[in-house]
Length: 75
Image (cartoon, rainbow, N blue to C red; front, side, top):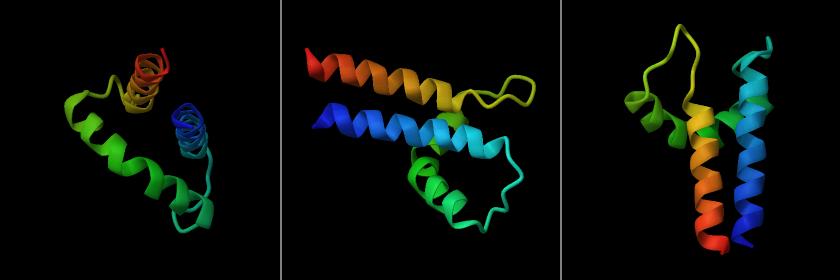
């Protein structure tokens, strides 16, 4: 169950990255949903992890953290 939730959340994070590459308006319902699900977790990571030349590495850090949690709790 927890593994499925972590997998689904990982997909939402990948979706957030893809949406950030598009021209969808911020008021679009899909953008708002993805933002509501990811920003509360990504925002603190962004404060700690500096961007590299305008590249936001927080989704990558979060995905690595989720995989770590998955391995930790699934063994």
